[in-house]
Length: 327
Image (cartoon, rainbow, N blue to C red; front, side, top):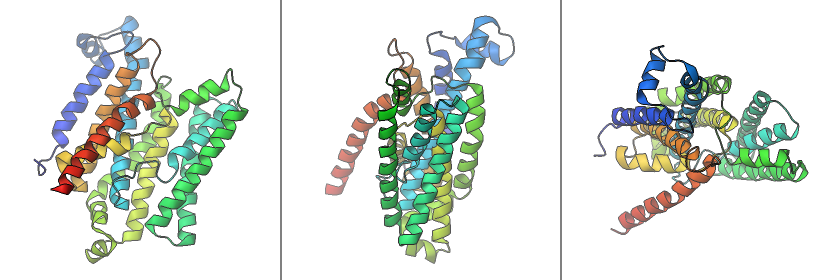
């Protein structure tokens, strides 16, 4: 089972999830309506819902899920730590600080997204710079990421304290919990190039990145330039994470939980894990977003649902691993 390539089956699961995500919502669409819209034979309210609301949101959910899952799998392999997630180097906290600052300053939505994207990248750049100045080891880099992430979190708390409690504070709180409610085609077109650009080097170098999990000495003996390759992996994973957070807010557990679940199917080989995790993360986020807009009268933030699902699943995976370790 571990030797099987799960890319094609998971691609089929993603297609089914995309169709369901488009169909489900306050204004449901039938499979026939979707087919008519794709063939250019639709019209009316259904066409408006499909092209302007449902399709951009579903594609954004797929991109965000794929980005977070792929980034999580990359960080776990690059740092040889199964507990690493996409926010380990402070990118989520940094992007959150920029977006929260944009909301506090009353900037337009696009400016808020760009500010969040930029501060996320700057945060990781500071983490890498500080780690190289101090010692350059993986442990130092992770510790610098934790420290700067905590500093960004303190900045977020300070801005929340100063924000208008009637207008700004609810917007900040809702954004920090993650949501795709306001995503439009323009937001999707702005974030998609950055996510695809970050995924490209990860996909092209997935065989070499997988060698990092063997350890630095073993990877060097196989001809890998460990330092440069790890920086490329971190750069690609950081880029996709910052773009995802700037569009959807802070969504936890996806980058930690999904790679672990897919690793049970594909095994530890990163060249198989990366595409499978990206497809599974995309399908997972599409279905979670569909649940978020249909489970209650008021839309549920994505971060609440991913944490509710992720924590029990992760505990079950830990229990399964503990039983294997005792055998």
